[in-house]
Image 1 (tube, rainbow, N blue to C red):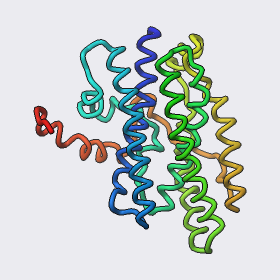
Image 2: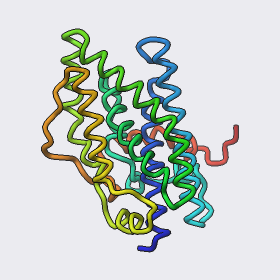
Image 3: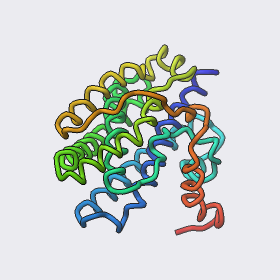
Length: 252
């Protein structure tokens, strides 16, 4: 594998995770529990879609085959996506969504902080710009974790169950393969073990404020680096890709 091939894959990992999480969050549009949250979650969805555009466009340019951001978003099959397993988890109830976003946002926050000094100028610029947005995403979700965890008996039980149910998908965030080895040596990517240590600290601090119990690390789901996903991704991209696949020449 060349450095260029590794960089394309790395961009797809980041871009795909943003794209799929943005698609999931867009499902909340007009269905939020209160008007203000409806707007907040829709804006978070748009932030992720914007981040996905940058990374997919860059991946297409590196590839040099003429594929655009739209081609990479709408004309790839499930096995060609490299998004985190966490990002494709269904929204569930509001607490489920908040917990998923909190865990993923904490990861993005520490990843982008580290990548803002990447030797790849495009990656560094994208990380620096996105850091402002994911800082808000992290603060927004963390405050909700505290409210729900330190709220009523019902909200505490529900959000604790949300953490317990989704925890096995967090290990996948920090998996590495040959792509990471090549890009870390080039000063482009970051060691996921370093991100995990910082992520663990953030998660534990917020859980303590929320008076929630951190789930035990046990079996962790895996596979996204090889294009292996849960049963949910196929349904998600089928809906996301229906229009451009059915009407490939459609214009606004």
